[in-house]
Image 1 (tube, rainbow, N blue to C red):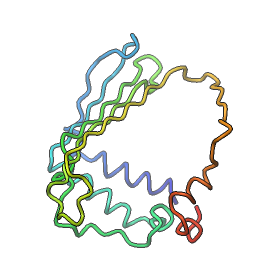
Image 2 (cartoon, rainbow, N blue to C red):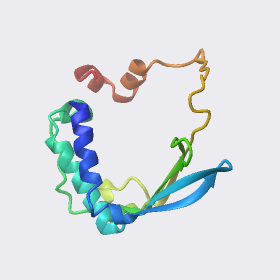
Image 3 (cartoon, rainbow, N blue to C red):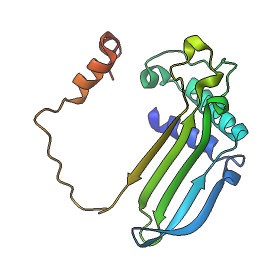
Image 4 (tube, one colour):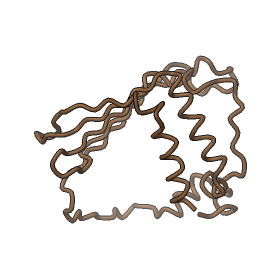
Amino acid sequence: NRDRAMKMLKAKLYEREILPHIKLTSDTVDNLPAYKLQFSPTPLVLDDLFDRITETLKDMKSTQSVLGTSTLENDSPIKPSQIIKDPLVEIWIDKKEFFTRRANVSFSLDSSQLPDENNPLSDPVTFVMVLKLSDHGQTLPVEIPDSSTNIEDFLKSLMGDLYSLNPA
């Protein structure tokens, strides 16, 4: 059951080894007072977090349907912290309404630790993702473009024949 798996994962993530790495401050976002949560794990915490997620996914009976595979192994001698550098998650929560107003995730990938045959990147790459949310509770008109693709056709184009073997 997906809900049960998510509860298990949340319980593992909220353990006391993770909490000291979450910083809570006051800030503003779009001129509104907000709580700002920052999570910047050390390399050791990052590796532990990945191990917890991997173990949780191994324990899930629905791993096959979630990941499209029946096995999930983490026997690699390379730790996530050797590749993922400067991870940072920031979340702003409105102090009055408690809506999430903004979320940022950033990190760099340095694959220089990977063997050449497994290394898709020649130089480090930095990723930054920003989510801004507003107008909570308002109707949002969404117009579907004429050239859009439905989700099933999109997944088939990404996964080819694998999608038809393991439909969602």
